[in-house]
Length: 290
Length: 290
Image (cartoon, rainbow over all chains, first blue to last red; front, side, top):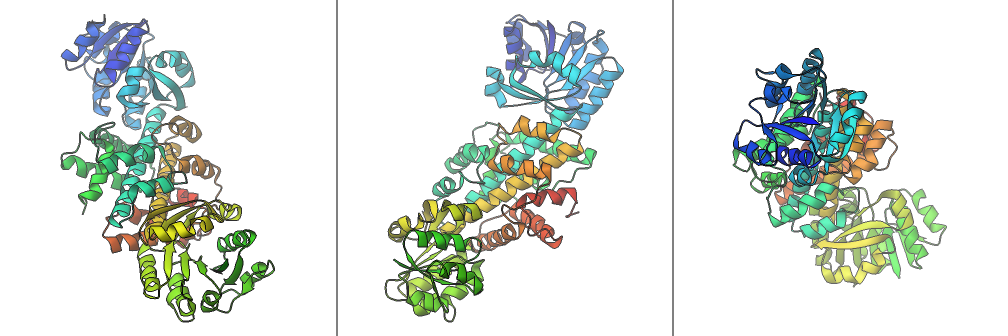
């Protein structure tokens, strides 16, 4: 199939490669021209614009940093919708605000372009392996049509509801991950300050109701002071910003997310934006919010 | 062995029964006289005071609601220390503030009484089954001496550090549990308000970094609006109050716990104190903190 792929960053590039490996023809675009070269050397066409991508494709996939980037690429001048042929589909796999997903979906509908939002979790290693978890929003017929194609890039693709619901699921995920990591940091700090053995405390509690994947993965990083990403503070800050926007849009109350966002922003301001989100521990160790 | 047991509530009564079943002689005490009758009918001696308990015992176990109750029973008039024979040991299995544990430990030391703090997790069912998880603070020699006895009541007993560390571990546990449950509630509410299918969202995220024991156990309760305890709001509120006290005492910064405590208090004030802590969802549904 002729597929367009817009956004060849850390996630997009390996996802595009997996589509090439599955035998699809690719037209690629990125604002950083050199990002296209690796894909071009594997046979992809280097497009001149998102519009150029769309003109050559039956399906366009976008994998961009945030809401404004996707709107620009899809709705903006020289964007996907300007080049859309009849029957084009758009799957936006970026992690953006669900209200932006709804806006993009509506703009696509108006042009006869079917659209899904399909953000992922799993990070670069799973993007490379093609084992991402894909959370999808949109209508069921469109989802069923493209599900097998999504599974070239992921090990699961789950329809979570109407347009925007993929990004809602992603944000729910990011709230839980941030809160679980912050709670690990708060608890471990108390154990350390009180003179208990934090490794033993971990061992004592991880089998009970306090147990979590984040505790198992991140608490040992905190105790070893290993901040190698993983998932970066900068990206999680962006996601929590989208949580705030989505909650405002849908009228959903937030109690933990605002303080979590403050913690993430304090880390960015202190120069830790490129570290793993387990560096939330530094909010406690350096008392960044005091 | 001659064991004294003070505090025959929901947890203490089945724990005392397990000690009787293991062949120990028991002197029991509770401020509610009728609470002693069930144990007396199984052969326990109904004592007149904590002092009376101590005079008849080589080991005294306390299982009381909170710090002031334990101090009263141990250090107060007609308390355990007034009746302590040479070589008496005290194991306080209550969930109290670690600074109170340290104070009780010091008072015991001054009277030649060895002491451990050994709070539990697992709730009433595991108290009945004798499969509690026991977190211990104190010195290693004392811990090794009494470990096998603790295992009449629990399936694990782990020494987490010096006096107070058992309660530190318990509080770390309670911070994590509260934060994980609150994050579930915040995320599920967003999914619901945004029109996504919350059951599918759960399915989509529970295998990843957002996964937790609390998510698996409590999110389905929230979606079914089943608030049957489990672990009550009232008790978790008490524990978070002790988190605040311990953090103040040890100089450990808190960022999530204060808002979690506010959420729990708002539930108490609204009359939900006897419901399961999964009722944190009501803070969002009823916008209790608005």
